[in-house]
Length: 295
Image 1 (cartoon, rainbow, N blue to C red):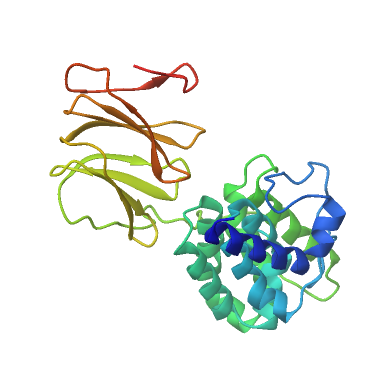
Image 2 (cartoon, helix red, strand yellow):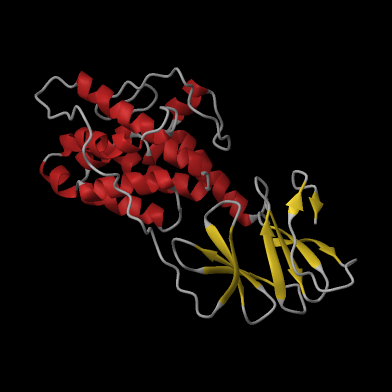
C-alpha cells in the first residue's frame, strides 16, 4: 500500500490498542463513521467512562495517533468531545497541556466542535488552573447555550458533565442555568494570499480552500488552519473562468478559456477526466442530477 496509507494503518492499530475497550464494546472499526447509539446514557467518573479507562499515556499519546489516522470523527468522539479525556488531561497533567493539545489539533483541523471546546477551555483557563474539578461547571456554562437536539457531540459533552456532577459526592459548584454567550468568536482565522483572487471554493472536506488567482492558468489548494499551500493543479493552457466543487463527493471541476473542462479527483489530488468537446471558452458550469451531469 502507499506510504501514507501504511502510516495511517499503523497509527490506527495503536489507536485500537489505546481504546480497545471502546472498539470491543461498540464492535466498530476505526475507519467507520458510526454514531453513538441514541439511547446511550453517559456514565462518567474521573478517568473512567462506560467504555474506556484513562491513564497518563492515553492522555499524552492517544490523541496524536488519532490525528495521524486522518479520522476526524473518531478523533472528536474519543478525545476532543469526550468529557473523561478532558478531565483526565486537566487533572493528570494541566490545563495548559490540554490547551496545547487543542491548539495543535486546530493547526490541522477546521471544525465547529473543536473550536467550541478550545475556546471554552481557553476562557476557563484561570479557573481550571486553580481548581480542575470546575471543568464540568465551565463546560455546562459555556456550551449549554449552543447544544442542539442532544444527538451532536457537544450536547453529549454537556450531558456527560452533568452526569459527572450528579455522581460527585463532595461539594461542587454546578450551574443550573446558562447566562454566558457562546464562546466562538466571529472570526476563527485569516488566510493571507499573495495576489488577487479570481475564484474561491471550499474543498469537499471543508479543511481546505480552492483558489484561482487572477493571473495564471492553475488552481491552488490551501490548508485553512495552517495557511499553507498544499498543491497546485496544472492542466489548462489558458486562464480558468469557472470553478465548481461537487457536494457529498470528492470532485472539483474547472472550466477554461482553452475550451476544456477538467474533472479533478480531490481525494487523490489528480486529474480524473478532461472534456474537450466544447468549441468555445467555458464561461460557467454547474453539476446537476446528483453529480451525474455537467451543464
